[in-house]
Structures are given as structure tokens and as C-alpha cells.
Length: 151
Image (cartoon, rainbow, N blue to C red; front, side, top):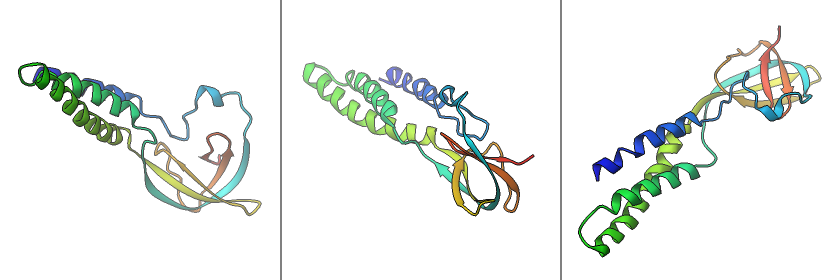
């Protein structure tokens, strides 16, 4: 059974590589060559936040499969294997869900900015760039929106 459990760890590490990149310099292919409005603004406040996964289905599925396989090796006889697979799948789903939640969790900053035309906006993004309160910046209003230093 321990041999089967050794497959879970590398699989969960693969999930970590799938964590979305949420920094101000990270762009998806779909947002490239798309026009976005840019507004000069000033940072009013900055605070650290935790960014958590919206969907843990991959971890739940992977954990359920791995737990079911590992659980099916428990005991002797078809009934024990079946019950072991069901129990292992249930435990694996729970562990996989929790593991993906921890793996996908990232730090971020929530910026409250005031544009030069007086609008107050909140944008949350990754920790690749820290912009201080009082600093001039640009609000890039697109999908996703981002705050970048004003050079």
C-alpha cells in the first residue's frame, strides 16, 4: 500500500506547477494584443492578502483515484478490496482537495488607488512588484486589471 501512496506526492507536485501566475507582469495568451484603458493614479493603500484557488477539482480527482487504488490493496477478498477502494477514494479526495488548496495558495497585494479623474478602484495582484502608498502608478483596466509603477 505504501508503494501506491508514493504516486500521490509527485502528482500533487505537478498540481503546484499549474498554479496560476498572478503578478503584474504576467499575461495570458488571450490578453495579448488586446487594448486596455490606462489611467494615471496614486496608490492610497496597500495590504497583503492571500489568494486561494477557486477550483480544487483536479486535486480532489487525483487524490480520489490515488486513494482508491491504494485502498483497493487492503485486506484479502473482493469485499475487503472494494471497501478499501471506497474508503481510500473518500480519504484521497479529502486529502487531494486540501493539498491542492495549500499548493495553489499564493500571496498578493490589494491596492486601493485613486485615478486622476477621482475614481477609487481596488485591484488585487501578485507580489512581483510592490508599489508603496502615495506612489504614482498606472491602472491598466483590462482582463485582468493590474497596477504598474508610473515611469
